[in-house]
Amino acid sequence: MVYLMDKINGCINASGRMTKLGVSTQSHGVKDAMNYGASNYFLMDDLYKISGETLASLFDAPDAVITSSASAGISLSVAAVLCKDHDAQIQKIHDSSMQDYPHEIVLPKGHNVDFGAPIQTMIETGGGCVIEAGYANKCTQRDVELCINKKTAALMYVKSSHCVQKDMLSLEEMLDIARQFKKPLILDCAAEIDFTSFTKMGIDYVIYSGSKALMGPTSGFVLVQSQDDAINLRKHIYGVGRGMKIGKENIFGLIQAAYEYTTSSQNFEVSYDDLDPFIETLNTINGVYAQKIKDESGRDIYRAKVHFDAQILGISAHEIIHRLEKGTPQIFTRNYDANQGMISFDPRPLQHKNDLDIIIKRIKEVLSDVEVL
Ligand SMILES: *Cc1c(COP(=O)(O)O)cnc(C)c1O
Image (cartoon, rainbow, N blue to C red; front, side, top):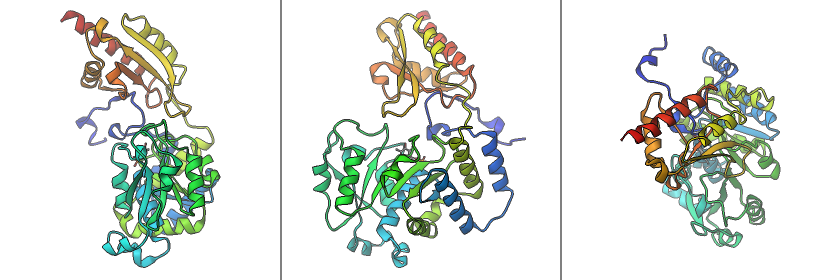
């Protein structure tokens, strides 16, 4: 008997890989691997090293470090670029004496986002000081170059739908500057689905979440360019990283999830094709216009984007969202464009094909409740 089970209900997640909804559910293979990890003892230093090497070989990288989350990966990467192999500094990354060493992290202002928590806080946790390059809506190569001085420890770039997309310098342009000024480049691409290209490009620290595209348990990892980089990053496990410890069961789960991903044995209950009848049915409702659209940051991910015409329906998208969340079962959608009357539905996190039918049924109920009023 799962003791907590009766005390909280599960919900339908049509939103995406959202931390506030539990990010992802795990495959049987991943759960078996976690069970194996949870049932045995290991020399943890060996497990960190070997699991990192294993992950690196799955993604064709020189080495990798497993972390408790992508957020921890950001903090530890920053700590690693600040301290390098200076053990004395590792013990005092928040000491004021660290100001004498390079500690500034240059980040385009439009990338200084809140991904569910502020990226700036993660950088500061690792001892870094954020220097914003450019403006909220524009950042050029020149804007970044103007921020580089003798206090600069690294450049950072964020590849995410959370970021301002237009008028930002490209990742390639950022890498050119990093090479020219001989500074390491940290890339937060936590939710990306490409696990090989960025390291191949030569980016020094490439940070992923283990529970997003890979559908692993709560975890993260950093792909690095050398074993020394991995060693220097892992040193912080015994410093600031202690509060971000990942358990052995999650390490086993993450590696299994990465293996399933690279061997295409990941199993989605609901496919992008299943969106077609869903969209067709929604389009039969007067005032509802649905279409299948590709992810805004260019990833090969498709969602149903639905416009609810408040004039015709007598109810706003915000109110529809509110009622879906409060109903039974609770349904969570993707709401970034709710101000424009749009609600998006992400099929990837759905657990059953008939979740789409339940969503349609609930939408129809919400809309017909309005007519009664
Ligand atoms: C999700 C996300 C994170 C945080 O990932 P966690 O593994 O939950 O810490 C960081 N950056 C971006 C861009 C994200 O999308």
